Image (spheres, rainbow, N blue to C red):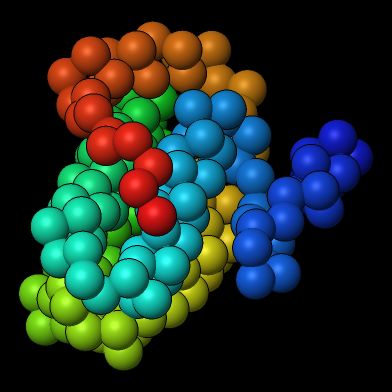
Amino acid sequence: MNASLMAAEALADIAGGTALSRVGVPEIDGDHQVMIDLIEQVDRAADRRGEAAAIDTILAALVDYTEYHFSREERMLEVVGFPHAAEHKECHDRLRHRIELYVVRCGAGQADGLRAVAHFAKRGLVEHVRKEDMRYQSWCAAHPNIRQALAGAESELFVELPPSIF
Ligand SMILES: [Fe+2]
Ligand SMILES: [Fe+2]
C-alpha cells in the first residue's frame, strides 16, 4: 500500500472508532461510507420505536443499498478481470444472505433487534472491506478500464436513497 493510501486509511474513522479501510476507488469507498451511515441510522432507530414506517424504510434502504453496492462491485471486478472475482461474489452472497436474515428476523419495532442488525451489519461490512475488498485494491485502483467498468455498472444498477431520517 502506498503512503497516501495509508494516510487516507488512517484518517477514515467511522463512528464507534473502527477504521474503515480505503480501496482507492472513490465510488466504492463512497458506497462503503453510505452503508456505514445507513447502519448507524438503523442503530439510532433503536431508540425511536414509535416510528415503525420510518424504521422499515431505513432497513429496506440498507438491504437495497447493500445489494446495489455488491452488484456494482461484482460488475467492476468482472470488467477489469480481477482473478478472484467469483470468490469475491461468494463472500458477498454469504453477507447478503445473513444481512437479509437479520433484517427479517429482527425486524422493525424491537430495539434489541435493530441494534443486532446494526451490530452485525457493521462488523460484517468492516471485516469484509478489510479482508476481501482490500485484496482487489492494487488490481483496481489504477486499472485503465476502471472508469468504464464503474460507469456501466452505475447506469444499470443505480438505487435512490431515502433522505436521512434518524
Ligand atoms: Fe466486496
Ligand atoms: Fe465493497
